[in-house]
Amino acid sequence: MKSLAVLILSMFLCNTAIAEDAGRFTFLGEGQCAPFEGTLFDVTATSVLLTIEEQQVLACQSRLTLELGTLRTELQLEIDNQRIGYESTIQERDLTIAAQQKQLSSLQDTLSKLSRDNDWLWFAGGVAAGIAVSYGAYEVFN
Amino acid sequence: MPPLLLRLLPYAKAYWKEIAIVSLALMVFGKMQYDHRLMVRLYEEQATALQEQIDGLNAIHEEELRLKEEALESYRTTLEALEKNYVEEQERNNRTITERRRTIERQFSQNKEELANEIISSFNFEYVPM
Image (tube, rainbow over all chains, first blue to last red; front, top):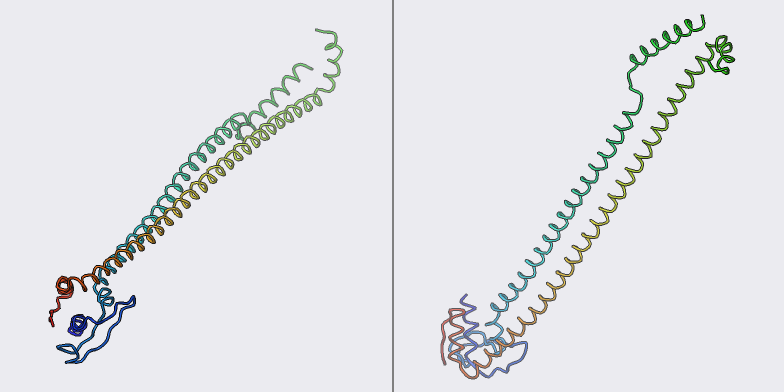
């Protein structure tokens, strides 16, 4: 910290620096136009040093806005996809239930028209019918 | 009795067993045909219902894909807008910083006391005037 203080303060020791875009600096010894040894920064370098924090804050805010926006957008996409999938699943469920109910009623309707699946009843009915037919024929033809 | 029945009666009397067997066989055959037609009709109804279900599921799936594509497009558009805003904001920041540096440079040539105060407030350094 002391070194940085020396560096920053030493820029006031001499105003002969020529401002350029990149900024310049040099080291001064005690008595070389300076009350103490240190580092001399020109005006450009000084302005750069003084604006570093502000520049970083602005850059951080911009980056933060971008990252938050990106994250929000990604989450919104995820939410949208989940919602779309959910709604599609609901529609598929309703469609499947309706189709299954239709098939079930069709099966029940057909089943009601088919012969009953009761072997003993059919056997008993067949025996009774055979006896009745045989007896009736016997009575008729004899 | 009708004369036709009177003529057929001797034959029926002679072959009543065969007639009964044929009649019963015809009844069984008829019942089988009826059941078969019912099964065919049931199969067709089931096939139609399944085809309708498949068509419905396909339509739902296509709609789902369309909506997801819309969501993805919206996502891309938003990301592009965010990146564009970010670039514009960076340019604004650069202009702000450049202007700020020019102000500091002006302070150096016009108002050194103010610049010194700014350095002191920023870094808490001690100012040693010459």
